[in-house]
Length: 123
Image 1 (cartoon, rainbow, N blue to C red):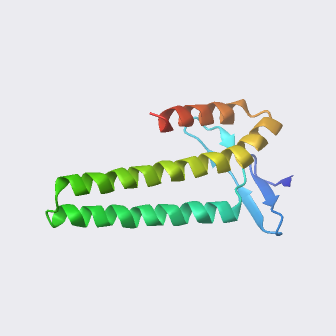
Image 2: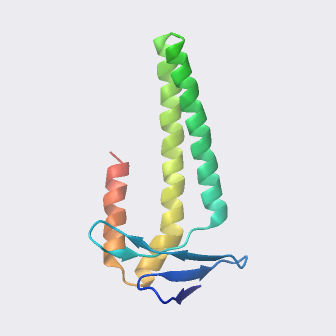
């Protein structure tokens, strides 16, 4: 649910658990974009990022110890795969919440920004 607040471009959202969230995002061009995220989904994304960071630190230690390059490359590939999966999770989260709101609010700029981000992510 979305309610207007006293600040332009700022919305207050109440999720199904009664948690209240206010989001305002301003891009480099001054465009204001507001949206909500499911806190449980964001927690899962943060946990995956934390695991990827730990995995990448382990790969760094492998290089510092002089471990075999093929083993390091295999682990780097695993980290890259983990990050891709996390990116897909974030993309789905954004599509389910933010883009739905952008469509409802006829926010063409938010949709355009998402399309550019998808293009960059898919490179």
